Length: 78
Image (tube, rainbow, N blue to C red):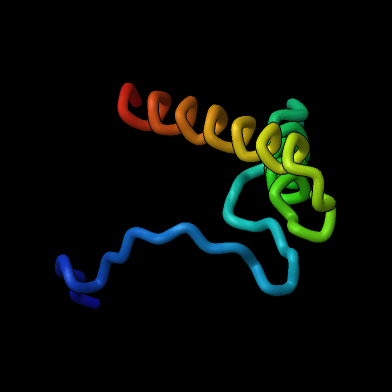
């Protein structure tokens, strides 16, 4: 097998089947915690759960933006 730069793509994807795989469960509860955080983020931005009130939409977008900013800082430092 040969790999080169064209074989790598940087992308954020979500499982169509809703499966969570690729992470090893060490039995310390961290995997479940990450899964819960992920599901909360997805649910928070689900348009069907937002309603039509401007302040609710604005609040959820701010929460998502703050979470992404923390993720970027974590990835940059790591």
